[in-house]
Length: 436
Image (cartoon, rainbow, N blue to C red; front, side, top):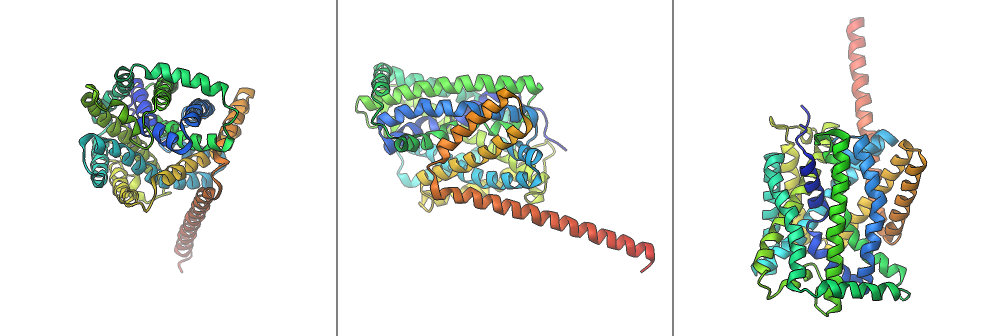
C-alpha cells in the first residue's frame, strides 16, 4: 500500500504558506530585535529572504526529481548512497522531534497571552495544540485542509490588522529602512549573523514540501506552481511584517520577545478578531509540520531505517502509527522546553543548524545530479548562503556531525544484519541440498 495522490495545487500552496510562515509570524520579529536590536533585525530580514531564494530552487528541483515521501533523505540516498539517506533520515527525525515542540511552544505563548492565563499554562496549551494537530492528520488530508486554508487567509488578515490598528507603522517602517540602509556602516557581521540565525527559522519549511511531493495531484507542473505561488505569498507576508516591526520599533513600542508583536494590537477594537486569527494560524502551522514529519517517519519505517511499525499505513493510506509515535515524543520534549531543560533560543539555533547541515548535504546531491551552468550557479549561491549562516554556530556543529556518524553506524549495522541473514539462509539451503 502507498500514499494516495490527494494533494491539489491549492492545498499544496496553502500547506507551503502554513508550513513556512506559521508561528514565526509573531515571534521571530521580537526575538530578532531582542537579540540584535531594531536596526540590525530590520536589515537582517531582506538579507535572510535573499539567502533563502537559491535554497528554494534547490528544494523545488529535489521535489521534481524525487516525488517520494522520503523527501530529502531519499534524495541523499540516490545521490550519495544509502548511508547518506540513513544519516539524513536520522538527523531529520531528531530535528523534527525538536523543532515541532519549539514552534508549538512559541505559538502557545501567544494563545496564553490572548487568554490571559498564567505562564504555567503554556505547557498545557502546547499539549492541546499538538494533540489537535495530530488528530487532524490522523483522519487524512481533507479534514486538515480546511483549517490550513482558513489559516492562510488569517495570516494576510492579521498583517492587515496590524496596519489598520496603527496606520503610521508602515510609513515609519519605510522611513526607518531608508535610514538604516544609508547608515549601515556601524553594523557588524557578527550582529547581522545573530539576527539572520534567528530569522532563518522563518524560512524553514520548503524542504518539508518534498515529503508531500508523492501525494501531489498533477505531477511536475503542479509542484512548480505550488513553489512559485507559495514563495510569492510568503515573501509578501514577510515584507509587510518586517516593515510593521521596523515601524513599531522606531515608534518606541516594546515588541521584543516571543509574543511582543501582540503589543501592537493592545487596546485596539480589532484585538478580539486578531486573537481568533492567531489561534487558527498556530494550529495550522503545527498541523503542517506534523504532516511533513509523519511522512518522513513513515518513509524511514518503510525503508527499515527506523522501526518497521512506523512504515505502516491505515486502510485509508494514512501513516497513523508514525503520527501517534511522534505525538508521544512531542509531548515529552514540550515538557523539557517548558521546564527549561532545553532553552527556547538555544533550541531554535540547534534546530536551525541541523537543517542547515542537511541543506549542505542536499546542495552536494544537487550538484551531483545537475551539471548545467544554471544549476551550478544556483548551487554556488546556495552554498554561500548556508556558509554565512553556519559560520557562527561553532561547537553546535558537533551535534549534526555526531548524528551523521550515528546514522552511518546504523546503516553499517543494518547491512551487517542483512549479510548475516543472507549467510544463514545460504547455510540452511546448503545443508538441505547436501542432506547434512
